[in-house]
Image (cartoon, rainbow, N blue to C red; front, side, top):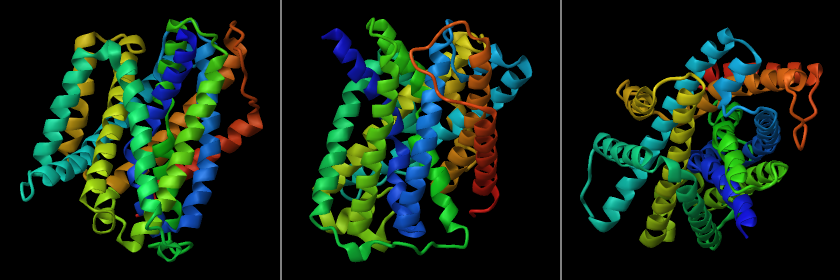
Length: 388
């Protein structure tokens, strides 16, 4: 029984990390970039992310030491690469946690307005409030994050299903924008946003650790990764198409406000609750990953590691970087792309250097590495310099 629970818990860790802030921007992006283009990118990026997740999983299984991505880079490549990835790691975690805080503040505002009509708080106040709440959880419940995430993830999926079911009753195909995009580079926008929305790399070591603690066979990690990646893809597809089919051109960035006049106040509250849960689950697992990376990979003290994890996103917020679509596209396209490049390079070296035989292996050759790295670089440049 405990072993079966381990697989479900590991899947929940991955699903709960992936289904986060990014899902609520997808309907808005699909409405502006075209549903056909967005779904095409969803399929392409899904295969790329699945490959990277499995690749990272093989790296974890090939290594005795407990690392995160920067630690694996230092172990299999060199110290220069590790120092470079430190900058990427810091920027990725700071931007990602900031995205969660910004979107979480919008959902919290909707919830407050429902219970206390007419009462509004500045977004900055709500961002600080959520930041304090989540920071306290990271500090006091660090060892229980996977269990907390386990229960929240299934509640999250249930609420998402409810939104899709209620929205489908008002679905009109005329509301779908099939091909038109808002500007000449609009067809590129979904790439970075979807990459960010599906990137669950931070949860792979956590999922492996869950299996290890429960004494489950490590070969189950491949099953966990496949199921844990496919479930969010299916949820995103259903959620994105349904919401756009209901709200059409009125689709808002955080999704729920655009549904208000159609589905009513109660469903909007449910959607806001869903969004807030998504932010909480992703924030907690991501913060835990980064904290462990600073401690285990860079050998920093717990005090410094906790300090950076807690203060980092707030410092970025004070730089007044508040455009969610730009933040998500940059984080997914540029920072996620560099993360993908480093995983490929580490796996290529790990296959040569590691003495451990993993339960599964990802096929990898020089030609494939060159093609994927080239694609990541082009995608990163496009998301940073062309789409806006």
